[in-house]
Amino acid sequence: MAVKKGDKIQVHYKGTLVETGMEFDNSYERGETLNFEVGLGQMIKGFEDAVYDMEIGQIKEVQIPSSEAYGDHMEEAIQNIPRSNFPPNFEVNIGSMVHGQNQMGQPIQGLVVEENEQGIVLDFNHPLAGKDLNFSIELVGIE
Image (cartoon, rainbow, N blue to C red; front, side):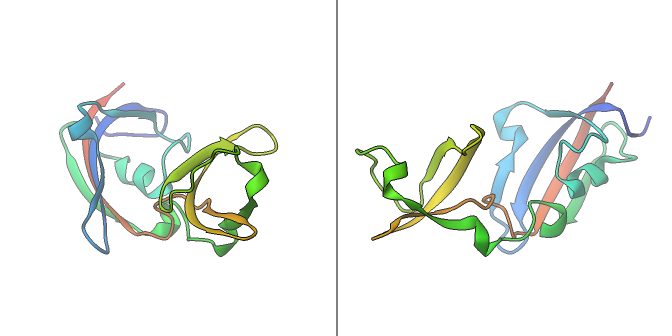
């Protein structure tokens, strides 16, 4: 039985960066599969495209360009946020992630890039934006 649109599947995977080979995620280490319904767009395009026609027990190695993963790194997603938008006791740690809400109350996160006279510079790009990715995907189950 091969994976088709509408199937609910369980996969294990390991993700590495094409450029450096550094591992960024590994479901085997967490000890739990990734479960999703194929065709709903819940996954990055390249990952979802890769699982079509896989059979239980099959392992597939795929390379996904950034355009089919988390998109390009966009300069306009790097923004200077006024210091007044942060709590008075906020401690700036370059390289750390901060979490908050946008004006519509939706959760957002950004990487602290720098602090300057105007405020704190945050990078709102996904941490893997602009990166080509390798995945080793093992199909564990199909419902």
